[in-house]
Amino acid sequence: MGETLLFVNILTVFVLAIFVGFEVITKVPPILHTPLMSGSNAISGITIIGAILAVGTGRQTLTVALGLAALVCATINVVGGFLVTHRMLSKFRKKD
Amino acid sequence: MDRAIISNLAYLVAAALFIVGLKGLTHPRSAVRGNLLGAVGMLLAVVVTLLQQEILGFEVILAGILIGSLVGAVLALRIQMTAMPQLVGLFNGFGGAASVLVAGAVLVQAIAAVTAAATVSLQFTVATAASGLIGAVTFFGSLVAFGKLQGLVTERPIRYPGEQIVKLLVLLTALVFGVLVVRDPADTNLYWYLVAAGSLLGILLVIAIGGADMPIVIALLNSYSGLAAAATGFVLSNNILIIAGSLVGASGIILTQIMCRAMNRSLANVLFGGVGAVIEDARQDDIYAGKVTATSAEEVAMILKTARRVVFVPGYGMAVARAQTPVRLLTELMEKDGIEVEFGIHPVAGRMPGHMNVLLAEENISYDKLCEMDQINPSFPQTDVTIVLGANDVVNPIARQTSGNPIAGMPILDVDKSRTVVVIKRSLAAGFAGIPNPLFAADNTLMLFGDGKKAMDELVAAYKEA
Image 1 (cartoon, each protein chain N blue to C red):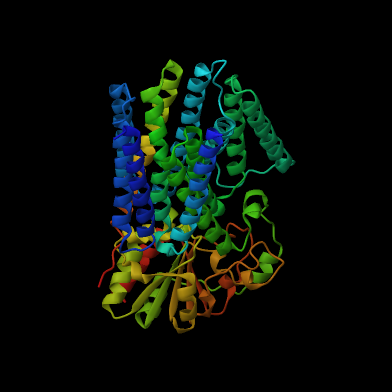
Image 2: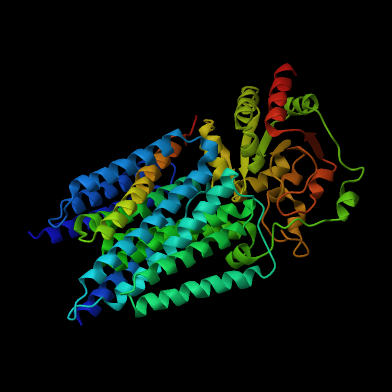
């Protein structure tokens, strides 16, 4: 029972988060489509948390190795994504 | 207080930062801050995870983070703005790969810990299979997209007889392995077979997509990378992964919808349809014969001098020719002469959503001059000169017909309604949709034949002398 309840709880979080995502994003001016995409892409690098947990709590060598590979990939995604978004956004200026 | 409680509360704060950050990214004034808030949220989540009691092997973790940060930073800071679509595609792929690897790592660990008393749950196995499949499609799909954008793989859609059946079979194979993973998680090889099938599916899906449909595919892969992260969240029963992943999944789907609407096509049509194949059209000669007026940079410069309002319509051709710098120079010169200059940008111009805006912003062109389609269209009748630079299908008037051609019904920029249209183009060759463009033969259209950059450079020089 406890397991099922936990599942229902995280399913609730999942469904509500999707609704929030739709509500937050609906109106994006086209000029920001690329930064939105690369910025949200950086957020999807959240798998970095899973990678840290896999490396940090892994007792199998294979788990640690896979986790480490995941950690490198996810970090590239996160760091590269936020930086490149910042670089792009700093170019969007309104001149008077 | 229990460390697990502290870390979950911190995850809650991080989730809030992601939401506020994404909200910020929807307006130019708040976008920089929004991106920073997202980054702060990510940093918070990482630090709190590292501080959890059971985390060991800090050296290895820090080494991994260091390597990843270095590679990511070099890529992000060194890349040319013109290579942005492939970079965004590549980062996307890394996110997908991370999900595949984390789910695999956790599966190996969980199976080793299985005893007679403790088994793995259904949620765990289903989520693992989903992470593996979506993550693999994302990673290999993104790699192919990267290859196409970088010019390593042909931009033309690769199509063959029985293509849809092949894709369907690969999808079914992947799903069968998915079911097997759920039924027999102890055999971890099954998971890697599933990943292999997903990888093949990702390659087959994207290789069949042509260059002009890339904005849709990039947006869709963006959504998948989020969904893969959310699936990994179910593997770990971790809320922050689920929240962040679903936010990105939702935003990617919205972008995909916007792109599809801008082409008047369904997503299924983009993924499985046949647009992009070269159509040999005999009518081409009838449309163009004797009606095309060629012009010179000098003549265009003279016309511009007498104009009061000029609109640029850039397309992928501008990016390829790297003609954005002379565009900016000419804009500045005309504005000095009191000419009103604006840019009309079609939502799917270029190879990723918003591609043209990024290139023009890089040139320091004020973003309030970058107008979207609905905003600029009513102004074309009051526009003296419209300069179409490297765009074709998005200004083709036959899209206004309701049927009978591949772009029928696609919303277009009404450039043909302006007093004079100057089209800068190498030749009369068809655009991506493979159809002739009656705009080139219209009475008010002048063709300035040549490479985009060279023609614009000449135009700048001629304008200075005129």
